[in-house]
Image (cartoon, rainbow over all chains, first blue to last red):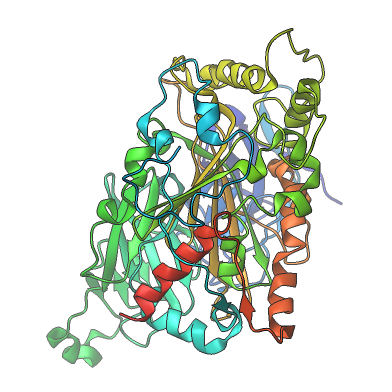
Length: 103
Length: 461
């Protein structure tokens, strides 16, 4: 049974930035791309590197280790280094501005 | 308008009857810039051209060996790689180059191949802090300087080798990044002349890329390029735009070896039609051209005594002024609405204009002589002083998708679909031909002949 978990205020996350948070023992990366928020697993499917700190542009995050790019919305990778998509999680911003992730 | 001291012209002086582009310039109400008054298409003859140039593997191999390694080629917009570490992987036939921003004002091109075992260093566009080969971890800085490899003890011999990444020449014009594999190549500026001069009223480096669509087209790259080098095909391929397109009255010019242009008057009916009213012209150009400021004729009424050409130009002037925040009172009607399309050898094509300039590029699709990639971009203005919008990422369509699937192309989508109805069919028909040669219209298809003459200069060098 999944439920929405409060994380932190949306105003804490600048455009094109990301922040990892642990929910139910899992590291989830919350991302802001152009004012839209996304939640993905914080682990590259290529070599299990942490994605936190990876550069975000145009709804894509680049893994800091080898630069593999993932679509934040679908989790789908680009290029040949991995074909495995990231897990993505439903996300919303509550009425009082808190980012909530469903897990 | 030909003068007596002009060298012999292609097709002699025979041109379509009716109002020429030069005649239309006489109706301009502002000063006509000199580049529009140029009217030159030197004699090139009318010999048939052998179809092997488009369909043979051997010819493709010759181009791979003698043409692509020598020409300046457009790779991306500088805005596509805005930050240090951003890069675009440019591929042509079997060549691969990492076009990288190495500092705020510098872009370099590195051969995309690891100096250890040869794996490509970057699989695709993106952003990195250094180039680390995914295979064994050999690493280079963004400047191409060798940083090392794991188990350095096993690579003592690397100390005596040139381990910095080999580079290609890089230069920019109009916000486009060009590369050249030939270290002895002439400068980009010299290569493109007189194009930069002709575009001095259109600072394309200040425009932003608002649309970028790429799709495979199943034909040789030249079949694709040539589809945008003449307006003669409009009468049969794009019949619906004839009411506002002076197709057969287009002007075709060549400038040196690398540059040519076609100028197709818009807002004026085709000489193929009769009885077209000014209202017809206005309605259709707004609805169907795909590159006017308005995309609907709704609510637009032609004031008495005003031509559609003038009306559309004034409408565009107003909207383009708003878009750019600039005074465009000295812009000619021609520059506000005509199809003035330049090509730079071998495969870069760009429209003149103040807003909504279209860019085409056809490039071989890998090492295939019968398949190419078609890139279309649209460059827009943003008001002076406002932040430049980001360059959009490329929208790659699947080979079987209609161009209308890229909604951002608007009315251009159906037009490209019509062209796509011909391009692979031309390739197929040439394979089936027993005649074995292509025949060209003397004047209207002169730019295609010009393209092939320049190709020969490279292949015979």
